[in-house]
Each structure stands twice: as C-alpha cells, then as structure tokens.
Length: 333
Ligand code: TXA
Ligand code: MG
Image 1 (cartoon, rainbow, N blue to C red):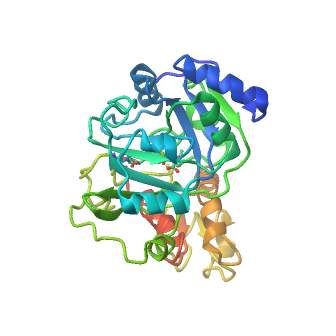
Image 2 (cartoon, rainbow, N blue to C red):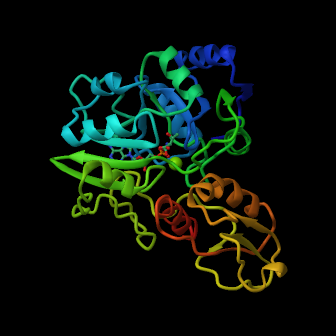
Image 3 (cartoon, rainbow, N blue to C red):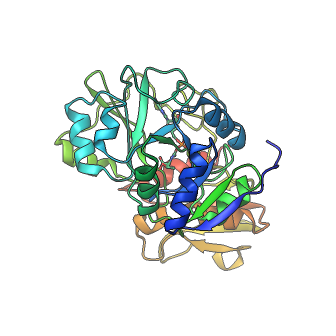
C-alpha cells in the first residue's frame, strides 16, 4: 500500500487510550504494545477495517488473524472451549498464549478475520495498554504483528513506524515489549491439543500444566517447515520474520563482511573481525534472548553487513520459539 496517511504517534497515557478507542470505532488502524510484540489493531467486527488492515500489512488475505479479547468471558462468546482449552486459559491468560478453537455460531468477529475458517484464534494479552484499550473498546480487536507482511515483528513503536508509517492511523508508544516473540499458538480441536506455533509460553510449561505431552501434529497443520514453499495451512508461510540481509544459522566462525548475532559468553572464533556484533544474551538466558531477538535482527539488517551469522541457541524453553523464527529468517523470501 502506498503511504498516504499522517500516522500519529502518542505516548501511552489515559488520553491515548481514549484516542485509540475512538480511532478503532471509526474503523481506523491502531498499533499498540502487547507483552509479546506490537499488534496492529482493528475492530474485529468491522469487515471494512479488516480489509484495510490486510492492505496496510501487505498480507496475503488467506492468513487469518488473532482476535484479542479482554478476558475469558468475552472469549467464550466467540468460541467453544473444551476441558483442555479451559485449563490452558485459566493457567496462562492473560499472557502470551493463543488458543485456536471452534468458532461459536453468532460470534461477532467478521468472516474476513477468520479467513472463512470454522475456527478462531483468541488471546487475552498481558499488557496494561492492550488491556486498557480492550476494556474501553468492549469488543474483540484483531491484531496481527504490526510489521509489513513477511518482515521482522516489531518490539518497539519505532519498528512499527519504520514499517507502517503512512499506512496506519495511530501508534500508541508503550516502550519496548517484554517477551519479544509472538504468542504460542495451541489448537484445541476434536479433543486434541496441538502446538501450531512455538512462542512466548514454553512447550514444557504447557505440558506441565496439562500433565501430559502435547498431541503430535498428525494433520500437518503446523507444518511450517522452512524448506517447503507452499503454505499447507492458513498463515503458515515458511519465509517469515525475514530481514533483507541473508541469514546463516549455526555459525561456528565468521566469514568476511558478516555481522554476528551472538549468544552466550564465549563468541565464535573471528568474532572480533565481524562487521557488527550484537549478543542476544551474554549470560546465555533464552528469556533475555527472546526479548532481544527482533530488535537485534533489525539492527544487524541495517548494519550493511553482507550476511548475518547466527550462533546456536539451545532449544529449551523459549529457545524453541527463537529457533523457529531464526529458521524462517534464514529462508529466502
Ligand atoms: O503475540 C502475538 O500472537 C501477536 C500479538 C500482536 O498478539 N500477534 C501475532 O499475530 O503474532 P499474527 O497475525 O502475526 O500471527 C497469527 C498467526 C498466523 O500464523 C495465523 O495464520 C494464525 O495465527 N492463525 C490465526 N487464526 C488461525 C486459525 N483459525 N487456525 C490456525 N491458525 C490461525
Ligand atoms: Mg506476524
């Protein structure tokens, strides 16, 4: 979409919440912080606003959106919760967990937002700005990550402005987001509990809470394999979260003119020769690494390096989500 709006940026205070809600009610597009990444919000019941949202993001319209709601009561008006879904919502909401559930007949969320599916993705975010907007608006708000489609998700208001300035109405600046990777998506459908996307709640935490392992993804709904090019399920595009600079994974050394995305105290040999170095977590903490991931990728993308070499990150806890995003960043669009 050609930039043509005067995008306003406001600090997150009481007045900003009122302004954001008025803008959403007019069918406007408002970026706001959640605990994971900044979302680009639109009235979930307004098909025209959602169409504008897809256009602003340049998003393929077969990719359905997450409806954000204020609490479980509002969520239950939109979807049918089985026992596992109830357990998960009680344990992790508000928080970085999205549940994909059967859409309830009469659910007010527009068909366009769910891309014509009979399921709906729901989340109660754990951020005071998102919560205040949702409570004041009183209706579900769809909010994909507030980046141009396929680009790196935004963890600051500045990232949003760089990607979507001129294409959206308002950005509410609430500072950097704390979790840094998107929500974990879990489908509770037909009695099975399947992870569709690793994210801000670790698999282990979910399995501990349920008292059992998650079901294997036999339908292949989450087959977001970076090698496959065709989306096998809505929204599961293999190249995603991608910087413009090529990304080289599992780096054990540095080649000429490469930037280094490091992890841990001990850097790879040749690190001092790197065009730029940013460390996800010097103390080797995957939670800190998740919070830094997208901002560091953006910064190294701007460094002018020929390639971004990435040191290995352990696959435990939020490491699963970090490695998923890094694999996607390494796929050529
Ligand atoms: O942390 C997050 O989840 C952020 C913040 C803003 O809340 N949002 C976010 O939204 O990451 P988005 O649109 O970038 O990613 C949503 C993912 C997409 O991959 C989409 O295909 C999937 O959720 N999704 C949405 N509805 C679905 C459904 N009914 N079935 C399967 N996948 C669904
Ligand atoms: Mg996204």
